[in-house]
Amino acid sequence: MQGSAVRRAAAISLAAVVALVGLVIWRASRVLHSAADEVQAEHQVHFVVRPLPQVLDSDFELISSPATYVQAARFEEHLYLAGPAGLAEYDPSGTLLRFYAVGRELPASPVLGLVTTTLTGSSQPELVIAMSRDGLIAFNGHSFRQILPADPDVRAITSILPVASGHLLIGTQKRGILVFDGRTISPLHTTLTNVYVTALAGTESDLWVGTLNRGILHFHAGATDGFSESEGLPDPQVHSLAVAGNSTFVGTSVGVAQFTGGQFSRVIAPGVFATSLLVAQNKLFVGTEDQGVITVALSERHSKPYTAPASQLSEVRQLFSSGDIVFALARGGVFQLDPHAFGWKQALQPGAGVLSDRNVSALAIDANNRVWVGYFDHGLDILQVGSAPVRHVEDEHVFCVNRIFADTKSGVIDVATANGLVRFDGSGSQQQILTRADGLIADHVTDIAAYRDGLALATPAGLTFLDANGASSLYAFNGVVNNHVYALGVSGNQLLAGTLGGISVLDRGSVTSNYTTATSNLKHNWITAIVPVGDEWMVGTYGAGVLGLDHTGHFHSYDTGSAAFEVNPNAMLVTANFVLAGTLGKGVYLYDRASARWSVIEEGLPSANVTALAVGNGYIYIGTDNGLVRIPEQKLHS
Image (cartoon, rainbow, N blue to C red; front, side):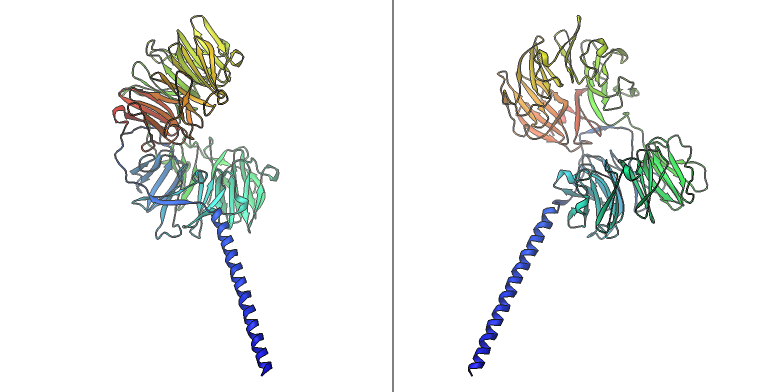
């Protein structure tokens, strides 16, 4: 009897111990699972999926640039071409059916990627569009939905690759490779983070990654191998990739490398700037920047590359095939190569534009109501109101345009460039070119202002004044707060020079005071734009938005207008009713002078990077890095 009681007590104790151990294990498991969930959540990217709003009639009118495309994809028997301006849809006969413009149907950033795939969680194939600053857009043929990450670094997409699992691999500028599985966006692997991705090819488990300056990365078996110049790659900057069987072809700025079985094998077409690659018909087709399409027979180890004659095949951005026909997407349109034909023929030609380029850097309206459009690296256009053709000016001096100043009194148009000051007469003919040899303190001129009886020029080396007596200059030795001057503002005899290190105030050509973050309540030393507004000044900064400066030298902030954003160099404009500030990636900040309130405009712009502003002919002209629009001034508030 006593032994039975002991056994029962022992059994109860054992059961209690087992229960306690089970409880400890359960709690430990919960803790481990919770920790794993926290780690996973920490690496996941927050995003929203939302339908794009319906298109409303916009008061913005696009002044067209030449249509250029960077990628093509077939979807529901139609051909779609993606480019900086938007998405073009063509039927099988080559007829343009619809154009979905950025800033209108699509977000205000260039389109740079295009694939057709069925994403995990979707019941049908979709056209997936990669935007340069606005994440992903999925199009089902009728409506758009946006997959928008919260992190701007994740929105800066460079390439996309659908894989068999239904996942989408996403290459970015700063976050490396991410994977979208329909529910989450997360890093693909720790060895593929913090990489500037330029191209993707392969599968989710056997992936080739082209980079901006680290050569080629090969992710396989859970590890990553790197190959650069020391391993045989012609150049560390990769532009294009193609995988065919056991071979991978890597296009660089100075040739194509072939990898076989994951190891470097040889260099093909040395010296060629390989922008796109395609393996078809046992040949390697190499699209180039300026040599058309080069063909290499892969069956012959030492095959000599062959270039077919095609004068319009420049800046080839994509090669793809349909059946036995090879297509090339180039600056001049879509070209095709039939298997039994000699040479390429044009299949689709993009529409012509009014302007010569789309990367606008300066704007002005002259006394004859002509619109002068300066480009970042393509000279300038002169647009005559009416049906007259656009006149393009481009040479060794008129190339990189920083500022255009139209003197309505004299009719002279002064153009500040990276290679001097170029002066045009009222007819638009070049009249004079001024450089350091003519007395300027530097060749690179960043801003121009009418000052007293002449001109004031801003340069990275100080200030130069031009008048009837010739040229004279001021710089840090003479009291200017910083030699690198970006912007000028004039009111009477007072000149404000905005520099990299603050503001210098000049009266009749002499420095009277300087404002910096150390000596005043200025919030940021890098000054990019200055305009007089009434009896005060508005100052654009690179990082603190727009600040007000009163006549006592006190800076003050604005609701909305003073925030952590960058005002682009000299992208400020004052009209009777408004002050406009063009920003880096945040559209136009608009100040209503009557209500003293700010608003932000992005919808209707071809890009949120607003680089130049001008007023004339009843319109406000807004230049961006992706095109030019105008809007009637009386409709600007809406």
